[in-house]
Image (tube, rainbow, N blue to C red; front, top):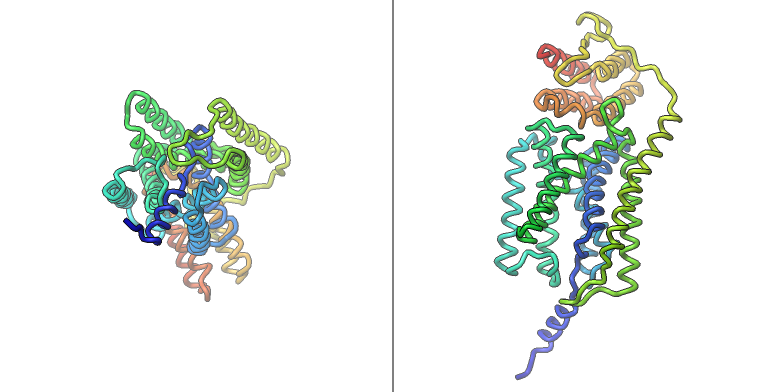
Length: 420
């Protein structure tokens, strides 16, 4: 029987298509958690600190993801640096996807979590129907790899939505969240050791690493006054990316030295060495965090806090705040808006823009700490602040619109204070 040359060529290509994902090891999970943290902190850094805004940041990261994903899909074999670059990009875009639905479109976290859960289930159902396996040890055909990356993107979105929902519904906070989500992953590992299906355990743990990474990221980025380490989004992203680069470079060297396994071959992995690298990476993150925090504390110059206007509604700012609102002390934010209103009255538009930036950075930095205290109040004040920032950054800023947004902010703060 004569075989069609095109069919033979396709068959040979499939035979040469090697497994395109790494072996599941301790360093795999460490890099995965670090990448989820970077997805949270780096997106925040670009959006707020750099000032790109959510839409421009989202568009830029999506464009980069498309390029890296195409390169990953076209690669004939597993390339560590390309694979993990794609994971980091998927982490960022998956996070922004959920944030877009929640913050920009106002979709409930209950709804978005349910939608992403259904979407992931559909990916798995279609994947199983066509390939009869969901194992990542068998990502050895182009179709299976496309299913794999579709599932990865949805797991990041689901992990973001589900983690945010759990934090809001249970008021976990980033400290408790780190313990809870870390404990759930350990529980999945124990259940897997006791007989739980390995594929099921993997995908559950993969989803849980997203809220764990976000909680750890918040722990490092939040100011010490809110119970965090105080590294900030930029420094945390740089630290985690450094550790990721070191671990991935080690994996790349290992692949270059030993080659990529063929189908069915046992991978060249030394468990003790892998555990040592994972432990070293974890220890490096901890030590670097301690050193950087100490250095920042020693180099910090005390700057007097802006005066807080807490007079009557007929005072200079017309904004009142209390230190014991359901969200905690709102006076720092009120002080910034008070200064913004003073700049508005004097026609100082550069000052207005600067104070708006201060407000955005301060509010974003405090989110993880104060949001769990009263999610509904946080969303109300977050909406008021968004309206104020939108008015200030309009193409043609209107004094009336900005003043109206300040009034909305004042009324929201007053309503929250009355609940104490």
